[in-house]
Each structure stands twice: as structure tokens, then as C-alpha cells.
Length: 295
Ligand code: GUN
Image (tube, rainbow, N blue to C red):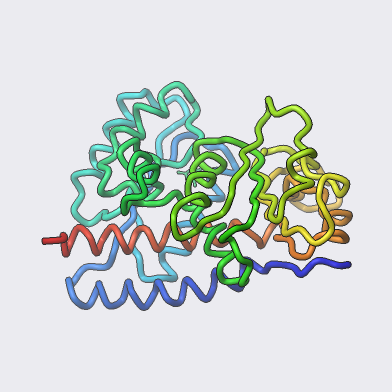
């Protein structure tokens, strides 16, 4: 068997066209394009490139972006001041603080300073709480993108046994909540670094989603033939044949797993483009809610 490749890039292009239409309608109705405020602290190369990709996608969809860039040594107070600036900026409907921050200890406080109505990443505790309760909220972009990708690829989630590897606050944990929600209806097993014998679980899965941040976390012997595999990992590995000196690999041992799976997402070009599309969707939704608040 050779797996069907789930082409996130082309699915995301369809979604981005839909979002551009919504953004244009909102712009025409209110006289102001939806706007995203971005805080980038330090010069972490991967974070810089993610932020650039997000801003380019905004521009292509008719969404303005305003970036506040701070040096790596910026104090907690400087970062909080940047967030407050964007909270008060009526032209910024959504706010994103790119993670990780150089000082990981300040992340919680910074996220909690974001106005929950502008929290398009869905990381604020108020929005996380709403997600857990199944209330309308901003769903974090990568989990939302994964569910959207599986839906558009016509891979059934209702009744499926989904094994998620990784319990991060950005991906694994919110994903496990989203998948088990009414209307999505998957049965979820969440594995993590302290799970003994992860293969015991993945071998029973209809769908395996790997968000561990480590290459080769999922190997062919760990899945059953015909499973669907979603690779969320983005790891830079040294490669002297590339001009950049590195290449991107996911968390899955791609070739052997693809030979056994029914469908698999590539890295790059799988989940990543969907994450960006969901950020655009959340930003347009934030603009709509702030300009047309529910009565
Ligand atoms: N760092 C890695 N993924 C994300 C994301 O989805 N949002 C933000 N703000 N930072 C990230």
C-alpha cells in the first residue's frame, strides 16, 4: 500500500480564498479591513519565518497586520505594554504573540494580558475554558486546522479512535478536547512523554496525530495497515546539501509509515498551511464579532 498524500497546501489555498471573500465583505460593510496585531520577541529564526508567513497570508487575504518587534532582552513589562497597545488599537481585531518567548516564565502572564475578544490563537484561559465547555470561542489554529484538513479530505472522525501523541497547550491538549466534542465525536487517547509503550495505543488507532516535536517519534511498526497519519512536527535537521544548511522533517518516519498508512500529511505542506488559514479565519471572525456584537 502507498498512502494518499493529504495536500494541506492546496486545501489551505481553497480556504484562504473563502476567507478573502469574507474579509472583503466585512471591509466593504464597515469601511475597515480586518486587522491582526503581532508581537514578536527576539530573533529566533523559526519564529521570524512563521510570523513572516502569517503576515504574507494576511496581506493576500485582505487582512492588515501590525507587527510590534521587541529585542530578545525585552522585559516582561515591555512585552505587556506591547500587548496593551494592541488591545487598545481599534484597527487590530486579533492579537497574536508568537511563542515561545525568550523568557518562557513570562508566557502565562503575557497571554493572560491579551483581550480574550482579540485572542485569535485561543490561548487565553477564558477561551480555553470555553473550548472545554463546548461554548463558542476561538479554537487554537493548529488543532482547528487538523480537524478542517481531515474533514475536507473526507476522513471520518465520528466514531474513529484517534491517538494523539504530545500534550502541549498549543496542539495536543486542545486537540484532544476538540476531537472529543459533540459534533466531532472521536474517541481520543492522549499519549505523552510519560506514556509507557506508546505503540500499544497507536497500533489500535484509526488515526494517529503526532505533535511530539521529535523526529521519528512514529515508526512504521507502531501503526496498523490502513491507518491515517497526521504529522504536526516541524524539525530542522542539518543538511549540508541545502543552501540553508538544514531541511524540515516532521515527527513521523515518513517513507516507511507512508508505505503502510492509507493517508498521511507531508512536512512541509501538510498541517502548517492549515494552521495559517485558521489564523486568518479567526481574525476575520474576531473582526465580525467586534463590529457586529451579538444583541
Ligand atoms: N508557536 C508555535 N505555534 C504557535 C501558534 O499557533 N501560535 C503562536 N502564537 N505561537 C506559536
